Image (cartoon, rainbow, N blue to C red; front, side, top):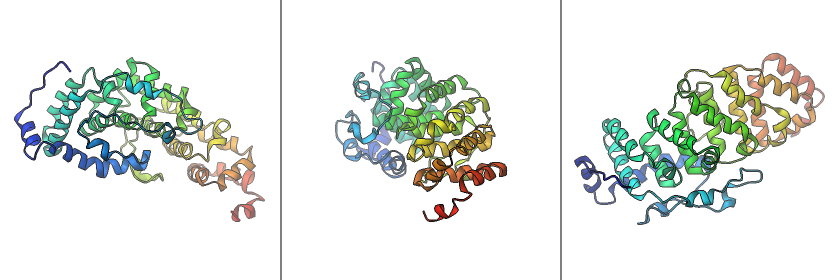
Length: 350
């Protein structure tokens, strides 16, 4: 970094008042409880504590490729991606101080956010590539539309390949969710269209990826004008539909079109990530009220044996439970006559 950061008195008081490790402890305490408990639930456990508490805080997050990649998952070269840029250690230390101050006195968050955003300009991508900065972005800029726009436009400038790589990394994917949720789906259509294009073009690979699937679920709710709460529960209830905003039905339709294409996804419904994404799409379809759920059910009725097998599966059955709840009476009747009639005894034995 070439810019010199001046430490104001409140920074000094917060940073040195309780010893040199005070900011780290204050922020780590939050991450190790509510933040990391939620993170582990969604992305899987990472042995993070030992890495964070090392003196050399620029140690990068890394994990065995097999920890996160499964068959058919998105194949992107994240290893080279992580090593292409120097770790912004000075900026990270500054962000730790800012995070500490905001937690101690939230009334200062507005001015500190603006100053910190200015300091982060030009380093957006390097910050997104490492675990510690990602947590700090989430801590400092959650809810800031200005920050979300700055990061998103920088990512868009580097093309879709960079966007895909960020989606494939758990830490950066979580940060992208935070930034996305801070946007206005009515005013930030250029950014939204970028991510919708990316998701639609890489649909099958992305819905099979453990990290990217969470971003897609958040994007889906955002498109229909709903904010999805980050909950430890994976089951979908009315609680996840927490804040109504403007609906963009046409854009959501692009996601629903690929998601509710029975021919392309029916063999994948027992995969947990696929089932969860489609559950969210069905929930959102009931708000947007497109014709894609009807198309999905009508196509499924032409393959009763496959549907019956899915109803017996652990993951696919959760999806079908949501589908039946959201379907109208005519579609339920079609399912009954096509799939259940004459097979109730077989299903009852499962």
